[in-house]
Amino acid sequence: MTAILAEGLRKTYGKKGSAKAALAGLDLAVPAGTVHAVLGPNGAGKTTAVRILATLLRPDAGTARVAGRDAVREPDEVRYRIGLLGQHAAVDEVLSGRQNLELFGRLYHLGRAGARQRAAALLAQFGLDDTGGKPVGQYSGGMRRRLDLAASLIMRPQVLFLDEPTTGLDPRGRTEVWQAVRSLVGDGTTVLLTTQYLEEADQLADRVSVVDHGRAVAEGTADELKARLGGDRIDVVVRDADRLDAAAAVIGMAARAGEDAVEVDADARRISAPVADRMAALADTVAGLGAAGVAAEDVSLRRPTLDEVFLHLTGRTQDLNQEQDQDQDRRPERDDGRADGGAAGRARAVAEGSAR
Amino acid sequence: MTATTLPAPPPPARTAGARLKWAVADGLTMTGRGFAHWARRPGQAVVSLVFPVMMLVVFTYLLGGGMAVSGGGSYREYLVPGMLALAMSFGLEATMVSLTSDLGKGVVDRFRTMPMAPSAVLVGRALTDMAESAAGLVVMAGAGLAVGWRWHGTWAEALAAFGLLLLLRFAMLWAGIFLGLVAGKPEMVQAVQILVWPVAFLSSAFTSPETMPGWLGAVAEWNPMSATAGAIRELFDNPGWSGDSWAAQHQVLLAVVWPLVLLAVFFPLAVRRYRSLGR
Ligand SMILES: Nc1ncnc2c1ncn2[C@@H]1O[C@H](COP(=O)(O)OP(=O)(O)OP(=O)(O)O)[C@@H](O)[C@H]1O
Ligand SMILES: [Mg+2]
Image (tube, rainbow over all chains, first blue to last red; front, side, top):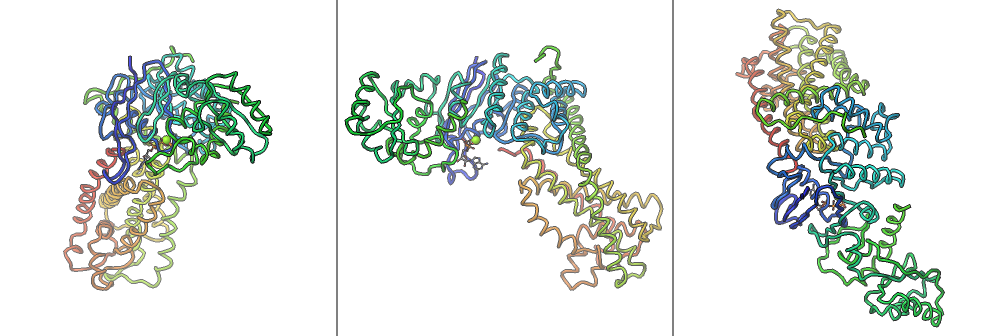
């Protein structure tokens, strides 16, 4: 059964015509009981899509069905079956964590005693017992996020939307959220999550949609998406940034991938290229670097990361600080890799940090 | 998770009767939230009660000596009803502030993803603010008595006067909800304050409109706040101002009609605006 279905979703904010479309015909299909990740750069339309599916926003066109109900025509039936963890905290800052959960429980019509019982269980589950009586305004970001997640689980929803659930959390908080998501999926909940962390999609998601300019540009399992990049890659870190160009030339030859496929990350002094024949590429790289007199700190063979898949599919790097690009004509990938080398480095550092 | 023993919520209301029942229950739950806010921030509640009292005391002693009432009588008895009406008008800002800070925090987003009655957020706001204003009126009237204000009419007339004050507050409430929904952010409230203050002061609260220059006097005469202030002066049997314009002669009528007109305009606007959030 399909738990979440979006077909041709369109949405333009503000005056039609003048503004750019936030969603330009988005399609998504998520089978029940699976985790689906939506990856996309800033402004791709991830939050817009989640808000439409969660009945907060009406699409200009297209259908949105959640748990077998139409999000536009039967919002109450959908609301009865979903939980939403929005990009920004949606809890009452003045009230305590316990008061928040009891309030939401009463508004879900659990009754006074039922709401109290549910609040206590959720506070315990998310390790908020001790702080349950403090006003939320005094919570740390991570505690607030956990409370927010607890609030979206009051119903034990069939479908859970998580909009960047772990942004701003420390590694421990992130692991806790992942754990909670995994246990929910074990209970049969369908999860749609958007994320800035490619690692998160890799860790949690059964399938991944890459969204760009309000459209899904690729869909598949993380492995399928990685396979699109043509298998293995060679990574070389040079000691001296001056020798990056020389090293890139050597690796281009050794990988037999053509110069266009070689990516240079200047900040990390790293060169990366797809390889067809692992052993030959490795041997030729080491020999070539030696002949050219380039000192390497590290040479390794590996599978591509989702980060690279992302760069490949959108022509951009995934980065929190990157401005939403206005230029419509995409530059060739290699130039992008050079121009945004720093951005790629930062994004990768974030992804790696999340794995630790 | 001990999933089996935990309560499961009932399905969403599918009949009109059930919807009405939940609308009432949810509205009361949201009102309870407003009271819980007071309990969490008693300081803020006290300030909102004390501020109008302070204004009342300051104005009675500041202006009390130098002002005379055109119709004769004690200026203090003229001023206190004016201050009561003024406090009701400033309720517009209070409502805007509390609503916009809710909207800004995103907690309203959570309410809107829940199968609760859509009216509950506004009903809760309305009941909380009305309760706060009623409490404020009692405190202010007490302060008025302390500085020498008295009512000379019957208890029934006094109750009618408080009823008119709360009616004005109710109209201001829906204006505040609408403007709060339009503004969206707490930062925008200041812009509205700049507009509200002159309108509030350009009334019969402090001085009789006859003493104001030409068109300012006319504005002050027809100001909804002047109507309420004038009407309750009549009901309290306090000295009023003795204009001979139609507005001056029919203050009680105007004090009923004006808020109803404002309600007829702002209530549907506010509800429409709330419903179209995210549309
Ligand atoms: N309330 C709004 N009013 C006007 N434009 C908006 C609004 N919300 C989003 N947009 C625009 O719609 C587009 C998509 O925004 P959206 O928030 O869905 O992106 P996103 O993928 O969630 O980005 P991020 O990764 O930054 O959260 C952007 O161009 C954004 O500027
Ligand atoms: Mg977003």
